Image 1 (cartoon, rainbow, N blue to C red):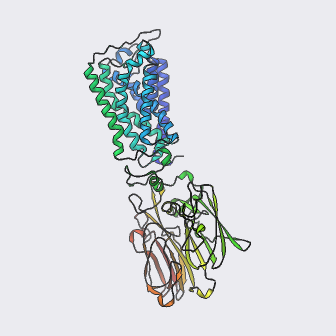
Image 2: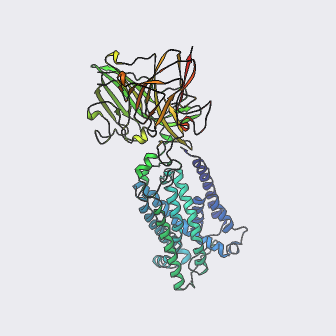
Length: 599
């Protein structure tokens, strides 16, 4: 599946690369008088570099008219290009093969680079130089190995010096799909690395061709068996100096990225994660942090819901031997928070917020949780006193529920009031992506309930949506939210509460969000705070306010009286939290709800 715009570009690029390589192959074997090893060198380079490889072939090697190939390829810059192409074609093939294998085995990036170097050097020396060039060079195989060792060593060093940093910084940048061979971005990164390696290896190859240390382009007419013997005039000190500089370049190119990147990370560790824009990643950033902040993979979405779909719907139950049995299923969905604006969310039962569990004090309940997420999860019953084994912290009271697994929570509700449920396995990621829901418990004695004419639950949430992807919003570099929702909707798509003058409204503020404190304010007069964190305040302790600071995990029950007709706002008093991607529409955005009071 094509996830980002770069994927569409790469798909088109590789179609052009394949077409270019087919053309080069046909033209080489039908018209161009090159030895077979050079024919395959140009074909491979064109597969790696696409239309740029085709351009190089036409400018450097393609015979423009019959019988002029020898004169056409004679300039030293072309001979150097031919030598580089031959080197890069063999070395890059070994490097690419090694990169695929090391990714499959989950080797860390630093070891990956070493294996790639050894594989590329072996492929270039033992296959492309000593074996495929044997007919052109003459002599025995091991004689050719000895004769090719130093030129191949120098050329390979310069090539890897250019290729290694490009692979490191692109593979371990924001979009780590570049480490996965199953992704187009991996092949795009390898192709760009090959291009960089060609550029860094070219000057040394020009010098070695000029000094007779390497072959450049050659002409092989049909029926000709001419051998291109090498006679070098390079001095030992010149070769030693060039070899030393090539080794220094290699060490620098392979070691320098460790100053900025965590080279202990492997493709298996990060699993194709895409980091949020602006995240600061350094050599100390662990793979766990990268996975935690990564975008939801759009390919995991199992269902999509439009603006008419509602969250916080009552969760039905069935009675089994006097126990109220509920079913929750966590999965990946696409949820609409505004017309035309969707988030890829983790959701219970296909809704954000998750379904409301409404029970009575003293009820025995069993909640069967099925995990259809791509990662483990648990459920914690926030604020409730439950048996320790039912509390939900991963690896503390239970192993997390694996992907595809199931777990049943069972307890008796001994409290009443406003509570909620959420995961306690990577909650900074999974709760931030939508795993939360209200848990409302009516008192066993109805007289313990603070009455109101209307009852409205407000569940707060923060979202980070960038580049068409959804990331878990977090209060850290690159993780700050740009959308805010009440009950899964951002204003002006939030619900309107309708009531009449003189009626009362109980608002249950629930801090289901994970990152910020929201000072929630109601226009049209003060409200009475009657409960906090699920505990009903005795009458003397109740107090009037017009704003309460709702932090993550906190709950406030307030009673607001409609004193005058009109449209009165409930909103967060941090102005940025009442915008949508830092813009306003119809007077605001984000954490806003209208109370429409009629006479």
